[in-house]
Length: 301
Image (cartoon, rainbow, N blue to C red):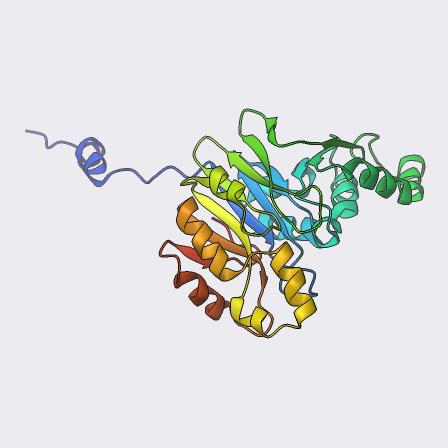
């Protein structure tokens, strides 16, 4: 009598018992830049990529955004290949969040992007866009009319000035903008990304604001700016006034996160001053018992 094939036995019984490996997440969140206006060589300017089914959506484009995208691609996030950088959302027009805009417009085009860049953001975005394209007019004309191969569309930008509400939708994502309080800026936004498998909320620069709580409500990931309360106490009064009106203290963020209930709280745009990341995390954990991490450039969630 012939024995059953061992391979067949394993296929029929052993594998179902062991279970299959979980399917990879369709959504990846990549911190391209976690920095502030401070010239920290380890942290590029603020930028987050939400990558869904290998399609990237950027939030903010601080200094270094394109090179960080390429670094993430080399680490395995294939959707962040530079020519794929076609859609971006800007929280507000502070320079540390937008100084990489010319790079985002031009470099992916030079490297083969054929589609116009789509950018969504607050009033003033169109004027900023027009001035950047005009500033690089000679570069663009030389690439188009000189001997360098170049397409005629990839440098173009479709800039859309938005209001709160759903601002973008495709087969991968619904993007909702909500207003936040960033001091004297008349228009500043956070963004909520709803993908097939996750909900991600990105605060942008803001004080502790109810709209962030409303947008999250148990979201999978909340990426929020923060400053150290201990470091703040050692700042000069003029800077204390500024930061308290424009940004979120660790104590206030702990209270906010307890109400928002994210699956994971990720700290970015961290103002530490003389404090450390570990001290900052300790400040948060004294008032918030959920999962929290200190974000670094090229972290993937």
